[in-house]
Image (cartoon, rainbow, N blue to C red; front, top):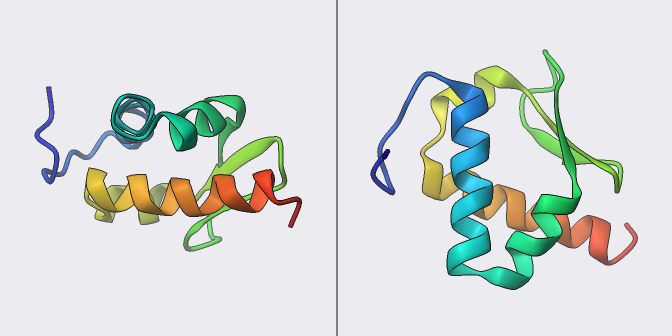
Length: 84
């Protein structure tokens, strides 16, 4: 298991770990995060959502800590929850 603040180069694993930890540590945000389908999108430089997908740039995810991804994912799911 990857420690909370550690980095890994496998971006798909980092997304899974961040979403799973949100589900355990912050169930409200985690439940919302699990409803979004992760989708890679090169060149956007960050993460985003259209209310159905959790869109992410693999370079952004690769350089981020898992705990930071948790915060960004929570931010994105609130966009979906609030209909932004």
